[in-house]
Length: 373
Ligand SMILES: *[C@@H]1O[C@H](CO)[C@@H](O)[C@H](O)[C@H]1NC(C)=O
Ligand SMILES: *[C@@H]1O[C@H](CO)[C@@H](O)[C@H](O)[C@H]1NC(C)=O
Ligand SMILES: *[C@@H]1O[C@H](CO)[C@@H](O)[C@H](O)[C@H]1NC(C)=O
Ligand SMILES: *[C@@H]1O[C@H](CO)[C@@H](O)[C@H](O)[C@H]1NC(C)=O
Ligand SMILES: *[C@@H]1O[C@H](CO)[C@@H](O)[C@H](O)[C@H]1NC(C)=O
Ligand SMILES: *[C@@H]1O[C@H](CO)[C@@H](O)[C@H](O)[C@H]1NC(C)=O
Ligand SMILES: *[C@@H]1O[C@H](CO)[C@@H](O)[C@H](O)[C@H]1NC(C)=O
Image 1 (tube, rainbow, N blue to C red):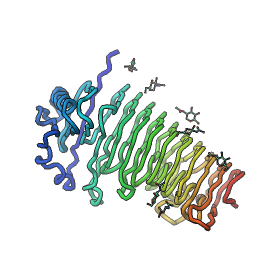
Image 2: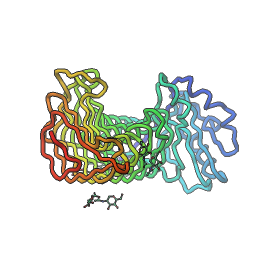
Image 3: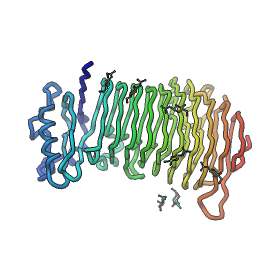
Image 4: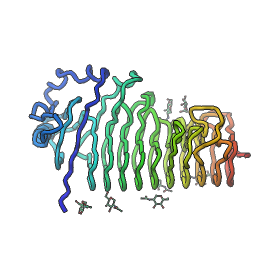
């Protein structure tokens, strides 16, 4: 079977924030190669594959560091595009936001690419700008992404929406801890997604698992700085949302504001269930274990996204704040929550940590600090 791969590279977001960044001066450096200079039209109709390949060959054959520039505000269509190495250039950067959609069976192997750089810092101060993601993947099945560095996205780094069976391995995702809303991975409406053997340092969630997602695994990840691995937030604007079968195994959180987090808005409906966080190492995490069913709003309401069948097992390490385990369920209650083999102490000398919980039902064994519900 012949598989046609269509990559749609888009930077069609009109934003005042970006203009300054993309002046042409910058693209006339010796080792900077702009696909437009090689004939790419970016009109959303022409096939720009040849121009991309020619630009790539120049980047690849350059001496020293080289950058491939795919400019904004244009829509490129490319087919069966493979950036082939090995390259002469010592380090290659691709300056681009990538949007991939409706593709089956695609492998993205970044070994020949130094990094995908969003150059997002100029966007970060602009709260009202619609910020693009460095890599947006929509409706792709059997996807394999490996060995890539994705850095300084304007918004979230990698978003996965409507995909089935995707594996991400050996990714290095990084942005400053102070950069706003720069999630590492945002997953929504997707099934059978595995993220493994990767390092994620950002200013927001390392991974956010959003509505419509199930069978999401994360393993052997180093997360931090950032906001931890989150299920949700779910139920915003009274919506019905579901997440189930999320398994986080053998991950390390360093200097994150949260570790294992589930967050739901009051007034929503649906469920977050069958979630496990196991073999978790904590280094100075502000809130290592947290369920927050009052996310965004303090008020109690008559409905909530139901949280059930959640297991936390094998947590070791240190917490920065006094409340290391914070389980705030709505008045409807969380059910079958299991805490087992948990040993969390303070990262501050001479301090103790405690736990706080509300409307929680389940079993708690071998857990320090003690949790009384
Ligand atoms: C996926 O790609 C592999 C390797 O190129 C090929 O052998 C396989 O048939 C493809 N599968 C589908 C469903 O297209
Ligand atoms: C999932 O995708 C991988 C390629 O990343 C492929 O090898 C595997 O067969 C796919 N599994 C299913 C169940 O389609
Ligand atoms: C995901 O995690 C679950 C629970 O640990 C495991 O049974 C399943 O095999 C994992 N799936 C993948 C694709 O790693
Ligand atoms: C956890 O992952 C590390 C690598 O990050 C590996 O060396 C270790 O064996 C794994 N431990 C478990 C219990 O799987
Ligand atoms: C945690 O953050 C503090 C303060 O920013 C920093 O000094 C420390 O090196 C970080 N720890 C690790 C292990 O990265
Ligand atoms: C956590 O610490 C306990 C006691 O120090 C140790 O027995 C256990 O193996 C550790 N678990 C992990 C996952 O590091
Ligand atoms: C722990 O985290 C806090 C808050 O992020 C930070 O201020 C402090 O420097 C960190 N401590 C260490 C020992 O890294």
